[in-house]
Structures are given as structure tokens and as C-alpha cells.
Length: 172
Image (cartoon, rainbow, N blue to C red; front, side):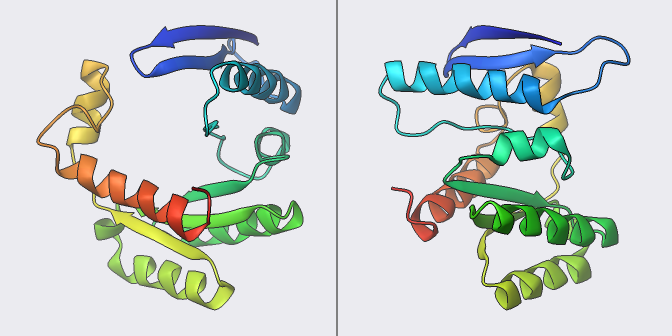
């Protein structure tokens, strides 16, 4: 793959592009992280956000290596609960503080409750629950962050998830 730095209204974005049938690799993620760290240090930014891939393979490990904390976004499905357990094990292996947010919680209330019970049992910070909302798709179509597009309801919910993550994992 190839990596790029793009300028956005929200600051620089370091990202990559993969060709057809090219696999993501830990090496590519490591390069992107290093460039992101350089830009954040040069701009004296307090946080560097890394949007890691799903799963527990090499790219995930490269995204987690050396980070202070991870926000795991769990889906309220049977496989989502299984995936959560696997990524929490990886986070623990690397001594990464972990918070959990449930995405589309209202589409699987029983599984959402199971995720919350799991977090309580495992001593994980539950940062919030985000409801299903078509505004996510609409924002994507318009090329805008969901926190900018729409009626603002989701902006408040996502803001509270962020605040809970920062506060409860002592990142401020």
C-alpha cells in the first residue's frame, strides 16, 4: 500500500491506500503511526488518535503497540461479544487501558446487556452506548463527520463517550 498525509478541517490525517487484493500489514500501520506521532509532536497535540482495523491480527497489534489506551467499539451480536473478548485479551497482553463503547446498542438489547455485564465482570470502563441512526449513512454520503451533520443528538452522545473515555481512563 501507499501512505498519505491529507489536510482536513480538523487537522492532518495520515492514511493509506491499498490496491485490489493487497493485504494490510503491520508494517504499513507502523509507518502511518510513526508519521502521525511526528505530526502530533510537532504541533504539540495532546492526543494522537489511531483508528485501528477490526480483528486481532498483525495490523491490530501494530495499531495497539505502545498506546496509552484503546476504545473498543463493540457490536451487540454474538460474534461482537466474542470479538470483544479477543481484543480485550490483546489489550491486556500489551498492558493497554481499555474502554468499551457499544455501537448500535438498540439493535440487540440482550447482547448489549451481556456486553455491559462482561465489562463489569472484567473491570473494563464502559464509556457509552450509541444508538442506531441513519444519520451515520447520510453523513458519510455528504462527506461530513456525524458530529457535524444532522440534528446534533449524536454529537452529544459521542461527546459523552469521549469524555467518559478520557476521564475514566485518566487520560486528561
